[in-house]
Image (cartoon, rainbow, N blue to C red; front, side, top):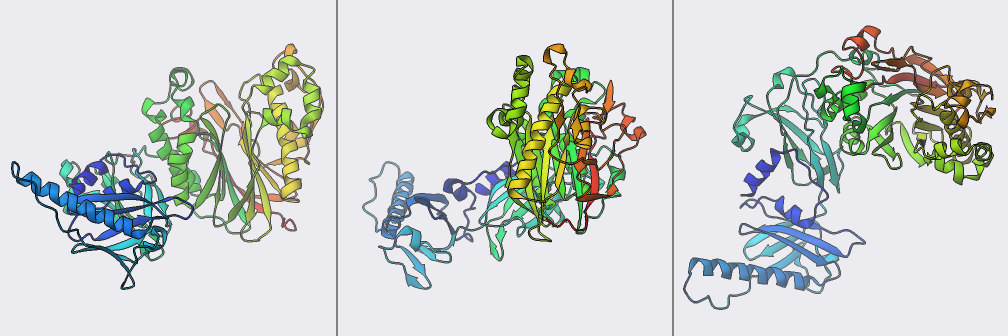
Length: 590
C-alpha cells in the first residue's frame, strides 16, 4: 500500500519538510526485506523518535530521552499483543475474545550484548544496534541521512537545467547520489510511475538538463541521502508535468560564450541583475500598461525562473547581486539552483514588502564573515553617524516625511577570500527609490549608504575594497552617479529640486569614499521597456583596489528589440544583467 501511496505522491510537485518521526515512519515501505528502525535523537531535545514497520503496520513512537529503555520495550511488546488480539477478534466475529496472550519478546542488543532495561533512551539507541521484536530483527539507524525537503520544479524546459529543491538532515547534498530517469514513452499511463521498465536512466548528477528528445516525457529523480559512506532511505520524485520545448535563442546565449569557464584567482566575476519580482510582473498594470507586448505565459513565474536560472548558471560568477527577489523565489528556486552550481546566498527583504535583495558568492572562493544590512530610512534616524544629514533635511518636513516612508534597504556582506586568508572584500547591494521625480530621495539614500559602508569597512575590514552593485534608478547625469563617481554633488544639482519646490533641500553632499569607477562603463541602457530605456544599473569599484579585466558585452539592440522590448519570451526581466571580471590590484591584499 505504501508503495502505491509513494508513487501517487510522486506524481505531484513533491515537497517534504523537516520530518516528524510519524512522517519518517510513513517513508519506510513495509515488506519482508525491510528490517530497519530509524531513531532520531538530537542533543538538547527532550524527545527522541523511533520508527519501524511491523506486520504491515507503521510503528511510530515519541519518547523522552531520559526515559528508561525498559519502558519503551514494554510499550512495544504490549502494542504488538493488542494488535494481534484485535486482528484475531476481527476474524472471529461473534466468538468470545481470545484469552490473555503471551507477551512478545522485545529486546535491544548492541555489539551482541543485550542493552539493560535501566539504560536511558538517549544512550540505549545506538547506531548499529539490533532491535528484536518476536522473531523479527531490525537494524537501528540513529540519525541517518534524511531528505527533509524534496521538490522538482513545476516547469521543465528542454535545454534548461532542472535544479531540484533538496535539503538533507544528518548528511550533505554534495555526498548524495542522484539518478535521473525519463519515461520510456511520451504519454504513459499513471501506472508508469510504478513500472521500472518504463523509465530510462538519463543522468547521474544533481542537476539535469533535458534535451529535445525528452520533450513530452516526465522526469523522475531518485535521490539517496548520504553522509560520507552512511546512506539513508532513497526518495523518488516524479515531475508533475512533461518536459516542454524551450523558447529557442535567448538574449543571454551569446553572452555565455564569454563566461563558459569560471575565473581563476585573483580574478573575480561579478553579476548585478534586477530580475523583476513576480509581485510586480503579475499585476494588471504590468500586463496591460507596462509590458503589454510580452506574451502572458512569458510573465509567469515558472517560465521566467527557468530562464533566470539558466542565465545565472551560465555566467559562472563568483559574486552575484540580485534585486527584486521575491522571498519565495529566493528560498524555493534560486537558493537550490545556485547551491547546485556552487553558490551560497543571503537575503534581505524590504520592510513591509514581499521582495528584497539577494547576494550569492561562490563557496569555493569566499567565506561569509559578517553581514551589516540596514534600512536606509531607519539608519538615518537611529544611528548618530547620520545626525548631521538628518538635521539638514529636518528643515523640510515634507521631504523628511517622504524620505522616512521609504523601505529601501542596503545589503552589506563582508567576504573573505579563501585563496588568501585574511584578505576581505565588502560587497554592497541596493535598489534605490524608483520614482522618476525622486532624485532628491535617492541622493539622501546614497548619502546614508556611503556613510554606513565607510564605517563597516573601518570597523570590520580595514583596507578592504568596496564592491557596490545594484539598481540605482539613476542615469549617468543624476546626482547619485555624480556623488559616487566624483565623490561630491553640489547644492546646485537639479536633483535637489526633482520633486518640486516644496521638497527642495539644496545642500552640498560629499562621499565618504574617493571616486568610484563604473566597471561596466555607461551602457546606452540596462533597462528597456515600452516607452523608456536608460542606464540605471551599475557595478561600482574602487580603481585603486580593483581593475576591470573584462566586461561581458550586453545583448545587441536587435536582440533586445526582437520582441519589441523587455521582458519577453527570450528575456526574463525588464533589466539586463551586468557582468564583468575584476582583478584585485597588486599590493592590495586586505
